[in-house]
Amino acid sequence: MATVNTWRAVALAVAFGNLKSMLDIFQAGTGSRVQRARRMYQFNNGLTAVTGVLTSLQVTRTTASSAGTPVASVPHDTG
Image 1 (cartoon, rainbow, N blue to C red):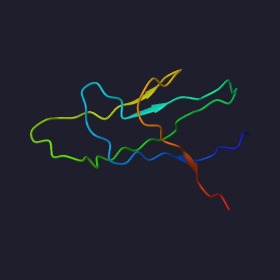
Image 2: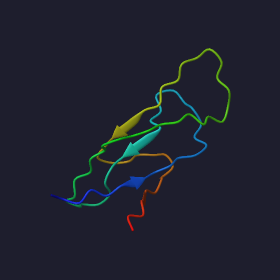
Image 3: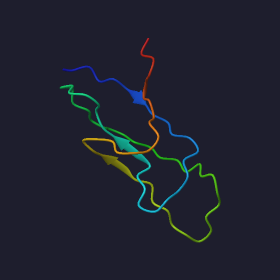
Image 4: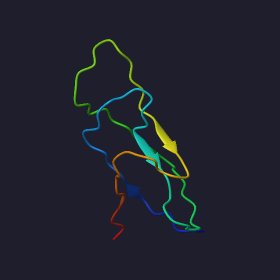
């Protein structure tokens, strides 16, 4: 059985926008490792108050990142 590594990526202070992906998962380069997201949690720590409007938080998986702020993932300590 393959070893499952646990990673964390946190994007703080992200402003809301129409049709905006809050987090984009993609693998840079030509690596052959498979990425599987087993669990994801999103918490709204918005910068501004939005009254009476539903805002959806989206996570997308793409083959190339086109824009936005990169977020580096950090491995959990397994020791």
